[in-house]
Image 1: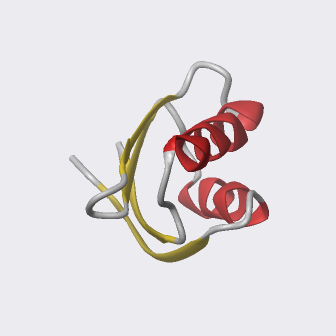
Image 2: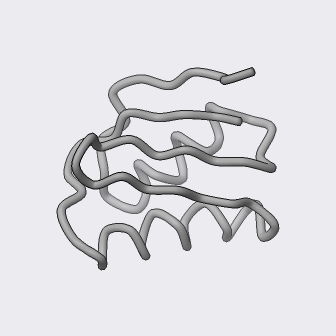
Image 3: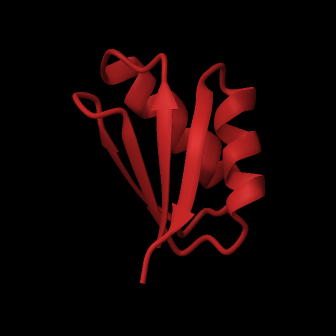
Length: 69
């Protein structure tokens, strides 16, 4: 699982935009967005840099990323 700290998300539209951005490259990805913490978790994606780029291209700032267990 990949985890990202993302800035600029504040509403359901943001959740949808981030989810669609990730799933455009990884259609089977499971995306969890926590607006309160700014955390985005992605399962079934293998390239953290690519996912971060997709989120940034959707208009959000990725401040950090990590691979979880």
